[in-house]
Length: 168
Image (cartoon, rainbow, N blue to C red; front, top):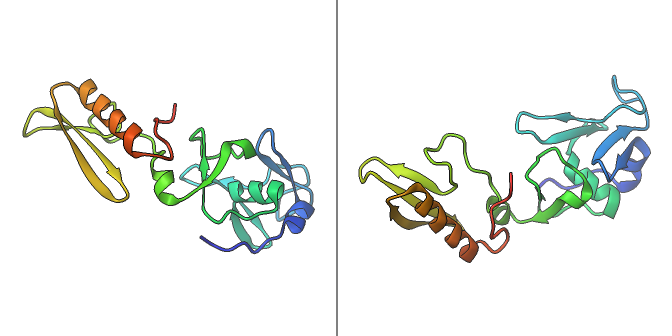
């Protein structure tokens, strides 16, 4: 994780932050941005960044610095899964392995359930889960729903940080 190179004092000199909306606005003219305009931009992954004094910062990290005068020493998790929702009460610091427990289902899977895929060889649904970089095979199931339930049971048992899937 990159070290902080901005202070809360400098951050508050150049930006206002509304903790209820999670939006930063400029207090000063910065490049082409005028005072009162929303600061930052969203990247192709959906996270917002703000460039201050030629350094690019993750907006979620700036929100925590702005409110708590503390630069996060771990990853910042968006509790509701919305990557550009930087309201301070939606942010939580966590380790990377914890943050991975909070992923959404990938779009390119054959199943509607996280941790479930269809096995062409057996013609059954396979459930699997990863914990601390170890893959666990949960078995093969006749129905997709049964495999999904097996995954959820394993998640509740093995994922301490986020034992239930995030509502999306």
